[in-house]
Image 1: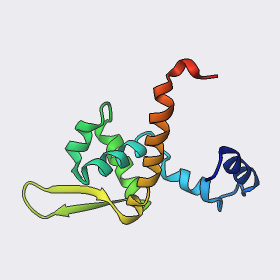
Image 2: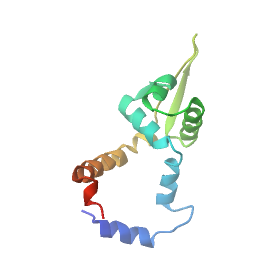
Image 3: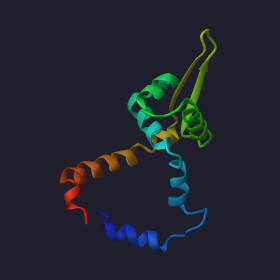
Image 4: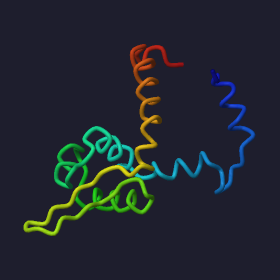
Length: 123
């Protein structure tokens, strides 16, 4: 099992250029809404635009459109359009997007452990 010190040592010796896997991975999460959109798609598997907007409070239609386009260009989500009236569009995670789910599980474990301790233990 790796310790935080092992991770820190690794990070301190890694490249800090555009080829660094950590920095390249973090680019996927750039943008205010990307993480939340991935989270919603992980929970619901397939979601329509309006449902995403309802599930993510305070996101504007323009912001959601930009974030979805960004994630689609990065290969994290897929947009499927059905040719019917009224038009129907659904979003879901690609295999590359689903590969991020262990990262969310680690965030879940971290949040469960450290948020239970409360903010009073910070320092």
